[in-house]
Image 1 (tube, one colour):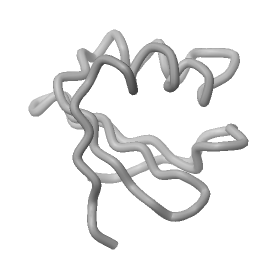
Image 2 (cartoon, one colour):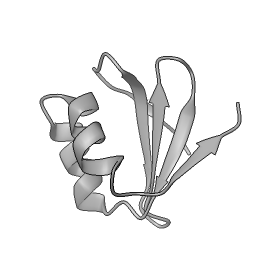
Image 3 (cartoon, helix red, strand yellow):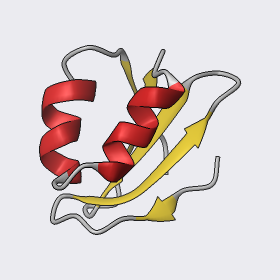
Image 4 (cartoon, helix red, strand yellow):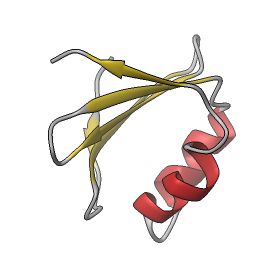
Length: 71
């Protein structure tokens, strides 16, 4: 899944697959995690948030299953 750079001190890039409702988060460390069951509205809200990292930490991470990705 393609990821696009974002303006965040903790998150480098975000990707989204609407068909599988999977959100990809790439951190500045290079680690990538996929979060399952993320509705399109939540993806849009993340990208529109004043602080993407804070929004991710409060609205996505606690509520969705995380799958670490290799490489």
